[in-house]
Length: 162
Image (cartoon, rainbow, N blue to C red; front, side):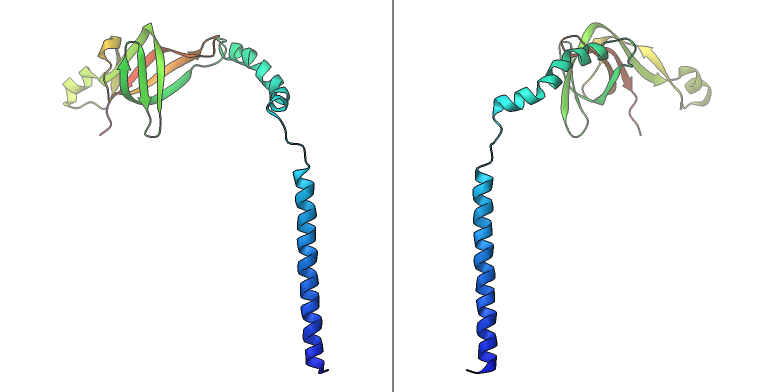
């Protein structure tokens, strides 16, 4: 037998042996993986029950007056009774606003406008909730209620940037 043919046969034999060992190893690992116990829904709930149990306390803490209010910012997309839907260019979010919420709109400072013909200063002016319009850029200051819902208590309307 030729030496190069013998080397080729040995190489082919080693290659086939590597392939067979790899396939056998893959099969063994596959059987082992299939035998692993998968968590059930009840196991997942039990593992997270402490986190779920802590939620009321967390909500209660956020309701404390020691925390600063949360601010929602966006453009008014829709107004339905006391609910304002905001859009920030990516998503919509609807917030219930108190009937007695403070509503302020920044307007050009009349004194500066009278003196110079232009105003770069803006001052807040109290307006009614009904004066909020679709398209307005607003901040809504919200607090977390005991129920976990957000409740708006103040609305600030900003002038349109040019």
